[in-house]
Length: 128
Image 1 (cartoon, rainbow, N blue to C red):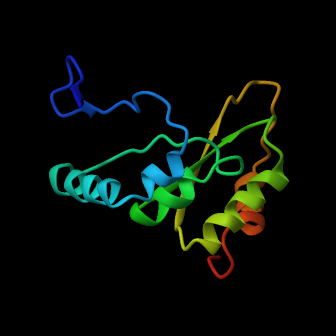
Image 2 (cartoon, rainbow, N blue to C red):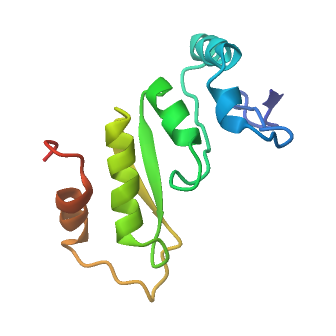
Image 3 (cartoon, one colour):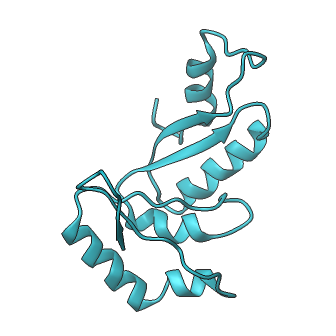
């Protein structure tokens, strides 16, 4: 864990080297112990995970987290992929608390009803 220069209360823990079996590592008792210790020491922990559809990291870390926010690349990620990811997380009992739109450009038009449309179409069943 490294302290961020100039920001007293920010600590960064990098992933380190790639491992051949990240899902086994994240599911291990040692990882559970680390997660518990980090929760005791820090008010907020932000996990930067890879995309949910190709790998299982989010499905392992998500249930151990209090809040999960999806990142959606505007104009590139298919809405069907977003829906599939939402369904996987709902099935894993992961609460999705928000959506971050990134790569917004002037060419991408978001209508005033976009957010209502997203919420209606992609929110987990029963959360209207």
